[in-house]
Image 1 (tube, rainbow, N blue to C red):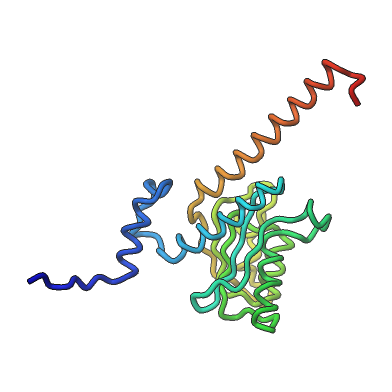
Image 2: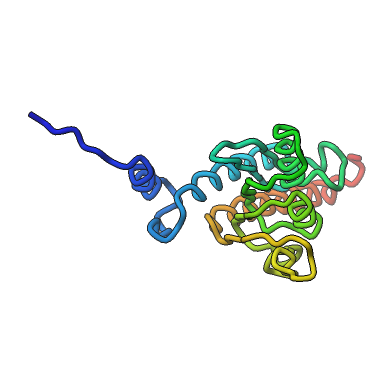
Length: 197
C-alpha cells in the first residue's frame, strides 16, 4: 500500500518554477518563491503594454497574498504623463481597499520606478517594493536616486531588486528593437518614395 506523500505546496511550487522557461539561471533557494510568482504576473502586465504599443512595464500590488491592483503603462493610450504601471496599480489597490494607505501591501514592478512612481509609493505608505531590472536613465530606487531609504523623508520602503531582471530587461530590449526597426523601415520607405505622404 502506497503512503500519501506530504509535500509543502510552496516547496512544490518552487520546484516547478525552477523548471519554467527563463528561470534556469536563478538559484531558486536564494529567491523568495512568492516574489517570482508575482513578478511573473507583473511581466504579463508588461506584455499587455507592449501589445498595445506602450513601453512594456507592468506592476501588481499584493495585499495579504491577493493581487488587488494591476497596471501597465498606458501613457500613449490615455495621453497622460502619469499613466505609469505603478500609478495605475496603486490607484486600483487604493480603490479596492477604500484607503490611500496601502500599509500591508507589496508593489511588484518590472522596471525600477521613476521619481514620480517612488513618490506615489512613499505617499501610499507601501512597506515593500520588489522590482526587476534597473533603469539607469530614470530609476529613483538605486540607479539615479535612493528615495526609498532617504532618511529625510517620513517613510522608508524595503526594497528587493533584480527579481527576474533578465526577463524584465529582455521584454524592454525586444520592444525597443522592434520600435527602432519599424522607424528605420518607415524612414527607408519615405526616402524611396518621398511623395507618398
